Image 1 (tube, rainbow, N blue to C red):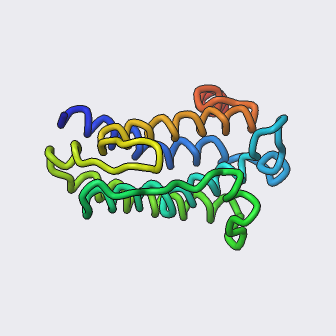
Image 2: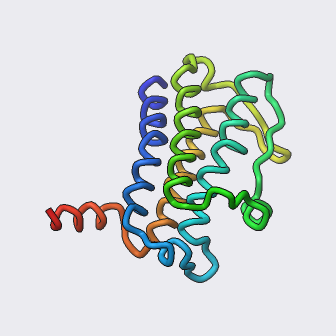
Length: 166
């Protein structure tokens, strides 16, 4: 369990840097572009930030503080039209997300081995913190892939291109 929990923490800890690499050179036009029915890169950055402190960390904190609490997650379709747009520059979104993610990682690093089996539930399912954090890691992975599609370049391609520039 300790190895797995450290792997989760490492993966979640890498996401702010991955996003920064992906959008570092993106113009405002590229950040706003949308493909089919997916969110723009800017909206994805806002989702990472907002989901971190409005959903993910709240669920984690409640699972640690209460016995099998009922937790709720905001649906993207409900969140997007009313989201906070006051800090929309990519630098703000990246910095705000990184700060929020560090707070979440601090909690995860403080957890005892037995905490990973604590439970919480939504209206339709029950889960352990281990299952929740696994879903959190997958959530990051899925939205990073969506970001890559929105920008038309993978993290690997960005790094390769920058290596050639040197």
